[in-house]
Each structure stands twice: as C-alpha cells, then as structure tokens.
Image (cartoon, rainbow over all chains, first blue to last red; front, side, top):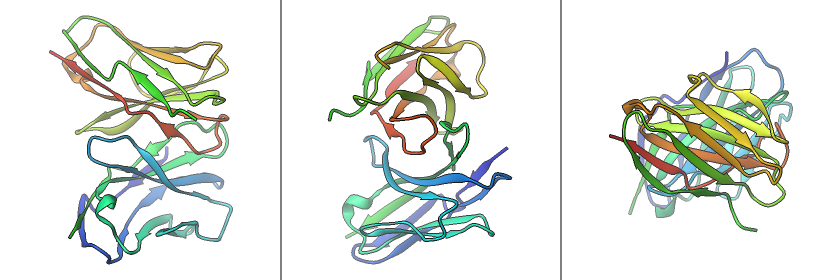
Length: 115
Length: 113
C-alpha cells in the first residue's frame, strides 16, 4: 500500500521570503504521479503542481517548484517570493500511473504567510 | 468553463437518516472521484467513477455508495448515518481516468446530529 507523509503540520514564512514544504512517500510502484494541492481557508482545493515519476526534471509553475528525489522517495515544494494569498493548507498527494484515479493524500501542512 | 459543482453545499442530518450528495464535473470530464475530509482522518478516497462504472473503491463500509450517470454527473449516497460521517465531502473530476490531474469542487459539508 502507498503512504504519504508530511512531517510539518504547521509552518510560517514572512512575505516575499522562500519556504520549503516536505513530503515523503512509500510505494513499490515505478510509475506514478505526485501532486501538491492547496486548500485556502474555507475555499476549495486547487492543484498547484504535478510531477510524473518517469520525468527526472523537476516541475515548476511560476513561483512554485518541486525537488523530486525518486530514490529517496521525497517530493518537496518550494514557494518563492511568498505572498499573503499563499496562506493555506498544502497537501502532498500520490497517484498510481496504472489504474489510477485514486489520490492518496498526506496529512497536510498549514502554511501561514505573515506580512 | 464552469468548474466542478456540488450540491447541496451544507447539510444537517440526524443519525439513522440517509443522504444523497450530487456532483457535476467540468464539461467534457468523464471521471469523477469522491473524497471524505475530516480533521482526524484527513482526506480519504471513497470511490471513482468513469463511464458510469465504478473503477476504484476506498476502504469505506457498504453504507457509502455512488453512481454516475450518462452525462458524467455523479451522486453519492450514505445510508444509516452515523455521527462519524460528519465531514466535508469533496468531488473531483478528471478528463480521463488515471491521468493524474483532478479538479475539485467546493465540497458538501455534512453534519450528522
């Protein structure tokens, strides 16, 4: 069975600074997807970034980038130039490549961006 | 394009009752997945439907069921409600099964008293 672990329940960062959220996972699959989702307070879940395991290049989306270490089963999210609107719960998630459709989520990291 | 819509947004039910939640996916999306979100258990996968067939199922009792219609709209039903069923129920749609990207709706907040 696959598991996803986020070891930082809460984090805070000053506006305009950089923060890194950690995620590790366990799987025996070779092909899979990894995601970071953002859930702002009382608002809906938004996909932040996606990584396909067979791609060695780390995914980036504007101020968001990942550090994907397949051998270490690590998938961290870096947020550069943090903005107040980045305040949210961030979830790391895993999906098998074959027979997918089921996201397995970590417990989440609550990020507060302070002015 | 309109996003994923879920109705109702809020619901209060009594123990022992049953409830039906509805989800309309993004136009053109054929896969719908359901998740339960609680403070204690986090986000847990309930089931996935694609082309009106259940493709994946999570570890929930048989009181939780779902279905998908030919227009890809989906419903989930919970019978004999328990206090522990109080949760935010999230629906997510995807253009194809197993492609990875899922787009979430705002959720239905169910409170069981």
